[in-house]
Image (cartoon, rainbow, N blue to C red; front, side):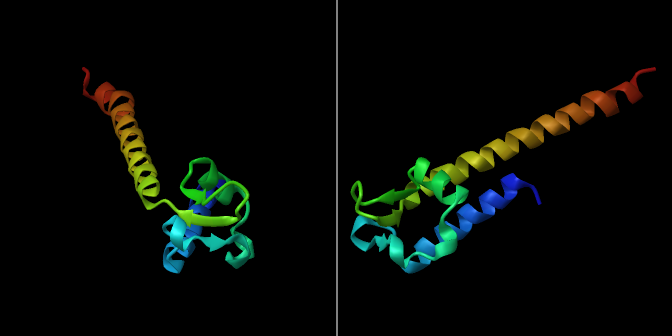
Length: 103
């Protein structure tokens, strides 16, 4: 498994933990001390940078999942995968199939 896939799996784990705990709004935010210790790292920083995981107020150390932002990021990732798959299929056709069809 590549490093990128591992980071995406880590992000999904963090999102699942927050979602299962019900930390999906500022009113239900979780203290950083209540979060599992293994949640810190690259995945956590990426979620924070994209504002998928938000702090209720600067310095509060209370965090919650912004489910709408998470859904938008996932839609964007799925679209990008679709585009990449289409590019690969077109490239395959151009490089492998078409040369075999010409006389």
